Image (tube, rainbow, N blue to C red; front, side, top):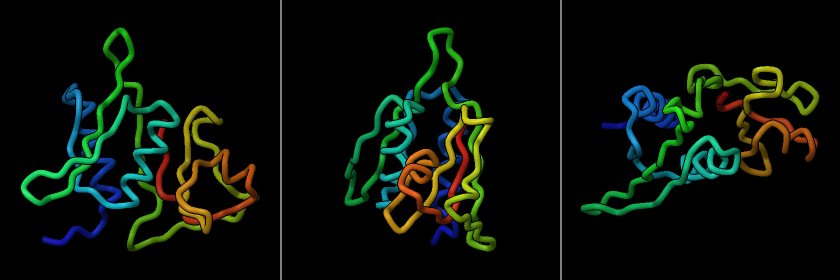
Length: 132
């Protein structure tokens, strides 16, 4: 079965794993999902991630991160641009998530980047998702 929006599927798996208090979630691997996981790790929203191959299927295992009192580090995930409605922004219109406390992830000509890197590099692109 083909998946229409693999990024939304990844965000939903992470959101569901956090609600269920899981330590890790498994996601079918693709290049864009691995880049998203790298950004989540760099921004300290997740503990770690690993590439796996089981029974010929490549997977991405994302280890979720919680605060010492047991609350998820990620309090919200939102898919912005969808296959049916793409959202593009110029370099001077890059959104600020939660007044700078969150992160917008964009697909640019320089790769998948977080909002602050896009502002520094002076590039715009497609807004993939918001994380806070």
